[in-house]
Amino acid sequence: MTKKTILITGASKGIGRAIALESGKNNNLSLFARSEKDLNIISDEINKNDNKCIYYLGDIKKEEDIKKCVQNTIDTFGKIDVLINNAGIGNFKRVDEFSYEEFDEIQKVNLYGTFLFSKYVTQHMIKAKSGYIINISSVAGLNGFKSGTAYAASKFAVNGFTESLREDLKQYGIGVSVVCPGSVRTGFGGLDEAKLQGKDYMLEPEDVAKTVQYLIEESETANTKLIELKPRRRFEFR
Ligand SMILES: NC(=O)c1ccc[n+]([C@@H]2O[C@H](COP(=O)([O-])OP(=O)(O)OC[C@H]3O[C@@H](n4cnc5c(N)ncnc54)[C@H](OP(=O)(O)O)[C@@H]3O)[C@@H](O)[C@H]2O)c1
Image (tube, rainbow, N blue to C red; front, side):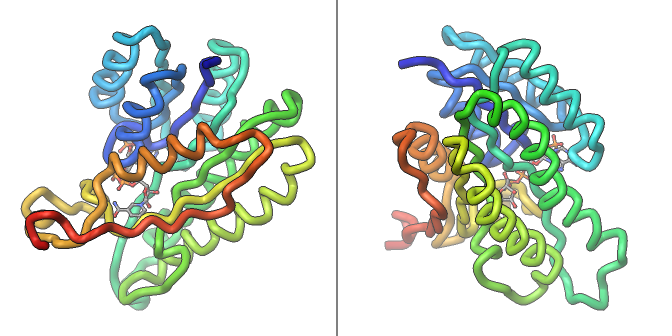
C-alpha cells in the first residue's frame, strides 16, 4: 500500500493523538499543536515504525503559523494526501455569561482554524487533483444543547462549511467528510479523569480514530458525507 502524507491538527492530545497513532502505523504524518512535549512523544512512537513523522508548533488562531505548517509539510513530503481538521476547544455556559472574547476564541479555533488549514492545503490538493479533507465536528454540530451556544454555533458552522467545501472540491477528485462524535473520553473542556469515571455512555478516542482510519482508506471514487458516531453502553454498566 502506498504511504499517504497526513496532516493532523490538534494532534498532541485526545482524539488527535489517537488518530496520529492509528494512521501513523502505515503513513507519514505532519502534526500541528502547541504542546511540544506531547508531540515529541507521539512522533518518536511513529518514527519507530518505518514511517516519518514531523511536527510543527503553532497556534491555530495565527494564520502565519498555519501557512508555515502547510509549507513545512510540503517541503518535507512534497504532498499532502489527507488533512484532518481536529483541533478544537469548548467553553460551556449561558449566553449572557460569555464575553465577546470567549465566544470569539471558540469560533477562531474551531471554525476559522478549519477554514485556514483547508484554504492552504486545498491549493496543493487542487494541483495534485486528489486529496481528502476530514473535519472533526461533533453531535453539537447537529443538535443544540444547554450551555452550548458558542460551541454548537462553531460546530454547526463546521458542518455547513464541510458541505459547501465538498461541492467546491469534488470536480478535482478531492473528498471532504465530517465526523460528528458524541462524548469522547478526553480532557476536552477541562474534564479531568475523576469526572470521566462512572460515565456509562462514552466513546474512547481510539473509537474516533478507527472511524477516521476507515475514511482515510475509503475508495477514491466514493465520498462519505457525514458520520454521526454514538457510544454503546460501556461493558461494566450492561
Ligand atoms: N471530547 C469530546 O467529547 C468531543 C466530542 C465530539 C467532538 N470533539 C471534537 O474533537 C476534537 C478534539 O477534541 P479532544 O476531545 O481530543 O480535545 P483535547 O483532548 O482537549 O485536544 C484538543 C487538541 O486541540 C489542540 N488545540 C486547542 N487549541 C489550539 C490552538 N489554539 N492552537 C493549536 N492547537 C490547539 C490541542 O493542542 P495543544 O493544547 O497542544 O495546542 C489538542 O491537541 C475537537 O474539535 C472537539 O471539538 C470532542
